[in-house]
Image 1 (tube, one colour):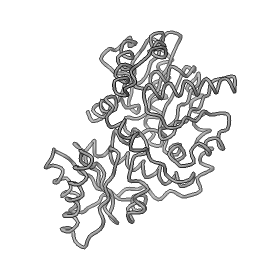
Image 2 (cartoon, one colour):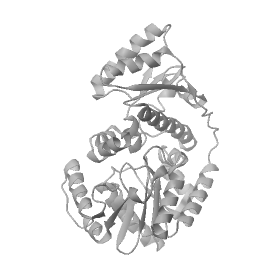
Image 3 (cartoon, helix red, strand yellow):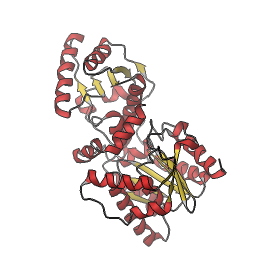
Image 4 (cartoon, one colour):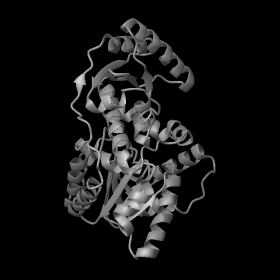
Length: 376
């Protein structure tokens, strides 16, 4: 492995192993030379990635995607783009490159590290995201309003970069995506690390509210096993119940939970789905279970799938998935949602994805593929 790819693996693991920047299989990284780009394969974990976890593509063929005319139907269009992306693969053919490959190609720096830092998303998932981004980073950053991932986001970012270059005479090294995350570009991995450290330090100065404690305690309640049994009636699910000061802050009542009852980012939907179920407290576990059973049935009827996150008023959170590993991922991602919601209060309060934005992600084959790979 040459030095450039060694550096790519190192910086990928550095950020991928830090849950303040990446949760589960999120984020992606790339390196490019004159003719090729190496980018993380879809669904691969940055925390443990090695050279085999990257896909090499022809930059010449990737550039053709920007010149083509695609269908106006969103799902058909993304399938057409996916096919052209596959044609650009040099090796290995059996892996699928990140859906954001073309976006990485746009950024004219040798290295690009895209992450979803919790504190960054405390800003990006807030009502005042654009204004606070401008206030903190001024003309050093490009802010991109929420756009459906894939080809449309690629085109919006391309236009944003062109406008930035016209104004600044250079490409942005910081690209903030509303309800998504951040792209950082540089010609060395050391510079990438410096830029991240500086931007995080700036955000830290604006965090006036102290985050509640995050030390987690197992929720030892019979309701956890009962919820697992309820889901097992549909498939072989596993449930984990947890509480912490942070969780307790949001499950106090329905109002506090309303600030974390929906997805902020596409990654939230991949791991936790988009809507989270609140179960009010009852006088007995029997009454609580009866209410939970009714609420789960109503949820299933409304959304067409089972809830992955259930909040028990005054008790904690239950994460449910098809395996213990997947349930832990759900718990980790949902805890991150709670942190984002809390941090967003420093910047105007939480701003969730819209139902239309959620529907696109839920029905997008690319994210369903990533969800499948993450589970395996």
